[in-house]
Length: 122
Image 1 (cartoon, helix red, strand yellow):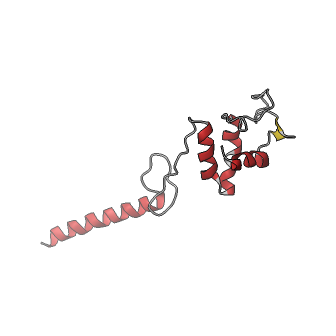
Image 2: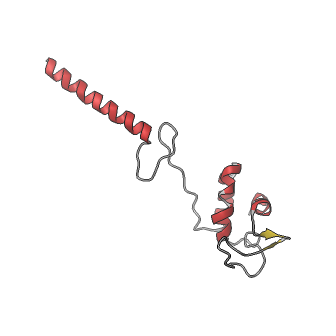
């Protein structure tokens, strides 16, 4: 486990208080009664995964921290964001973004009309 993961926990985890883990999640349910931070014990922490790790997106360190956390939790898989050819993020079950889908539809229609017009002229 890298030092950057522990530093990130100390700086951004709401459960980290006075060098110990409060062990309370967002719904005020206790999940860690030992008062020892699971990240420091090299164990997976559901609160860290659900609430603290998304902060790394804003800080620009998500890739590095997700890789370090995946060493602790083998079930945690960093999902790659699918992108369209123009760079826009794709929604689930989509091949193209809305803008590119519209352009592709127009190009297809234009090509079909062009082929039909050439057949008629011959």
